[in-house]
Length: 239
Image 1 (cartoon, rainbow, N blue to C red):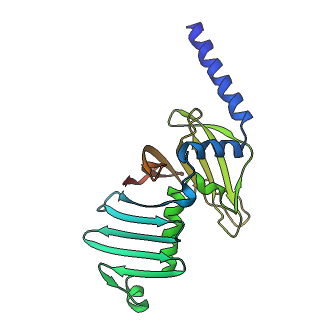
Image 2 (tube, one colour):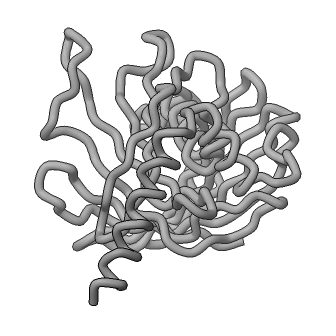
């Protein structure tokens, strides 16, 4: 028993020392090397499918096409037999309902806008481009790495804030201390003074992986509220 206790104590000490010695930029570099070992993100051009399941709603299946070199993005979402397609081709935007291309008036009736198209582009590119997207201009990485336990597992935690021109949320990214795989991320809203609102935001548990164009992406993302752990839904990626 004494030997087992000593072993656990030693492991805990080593983990603490490692988390204190590694900087935020070093942790990010290791995480990117894990998820994008061949440096493919900058030339990423591929498509994948995401199925979103939420309580009391039918599933929504989204076909997503991202080409960073061509500055092209498209998402076609299908729920209950109806589809909406948002396309951003450089600075051009196109909106479709089922197979019909919509003009501005028709799009407004269906609550579809180019602003929303760009929101989807930023949303999917950011989440499925992590952790590589943390190298983007306007992202501020905290040099101090912290240690935190979630669901019984210890993680190295990276904090990211953003220039006001980019966003006001505060994000935390949780990495396996041995492989540097990203397994959790979490965000909080801030008030007018820039202080975190403790009861705001969500955390997302990442399980399994799917390799898309050489990049290890989370296959399953389960979303929860920070304030009460209420389950929101799950996204499942398929190639």
